[in-house]
Image 1 (tube, rainbow, N blue to C red):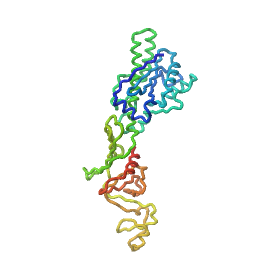
Image 2: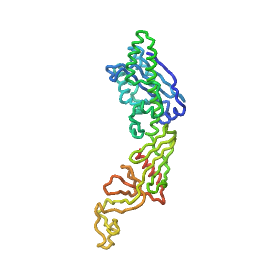
Image 3: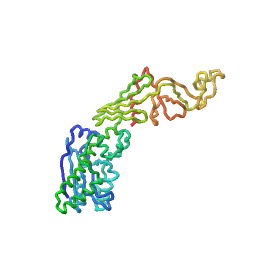
Image 4: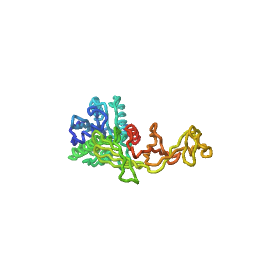
Length: 366
């Protein structure tokens, strides 16, 4: 087994953004990635483990490389000892492959898994929850690296590396001068996988965003198409300016600011009362009133309300609400009784919405 250790060059601001995006103390975190000769631990070998960790304001890398066919157990033992000091393991799709593969290898060698009792964070799964935001063709590591502006030096896939490792072992046996080139290509691939994984921790800045105290204003530049704009600032910064639209809502992430633009409905909507049996409908006024009031109306000008006619109507600006967001003590309006979308009336004379409402509203958009 060969063990290689080096510093990974990363811009200080980028390194700081990565640290701030992760919800754990920097010193507790270990990034890792593995390279194997196949997908099944029963019929393939582990030939490389790479680990990266924060050391103050720098990033360190250690790689355990099998430079022969008998180093697998030695690599597992050394990595387990190294991993003891970390409580959090961060990876990219490691829940699907890397961790199950290693755990089976540790089991087959009669050893305890270093992941037992530790935290595991899969950036692929976390970022994938908001994959539509990024507008990328997929969520592969190399794709998200490009999204974040990282251009790899390595040009090989994990599958390509299986052949490279086979060639490395052959060249080593025959003392071929290409042996060192293949070795360096394998190490570089793992290096770039780890660099990309650390870089992708910044994706959590978008996906883990939680609104705090957003500012609110009614956009009046377009009277016929009014928009509610919510803005908020964050600690740290978004690594890439991101503009996306989901369900007619525009999301913009720029530097340390988030902005959401929500088209408002301008017109007349209806608030339907649920207990229609306790109401009268007044055809001339086109509205329902409670029986305690309607009893004083001439019987010829009133009729028993039905579920469809038990409403009051209002004209003006309305904010569409997320499906499961039902603010307490606020009357909600609809275009029709059975519509799934509810609206909140916004008083143009007093457009400010309460802080609690805005935080609750935003939490249902993220």
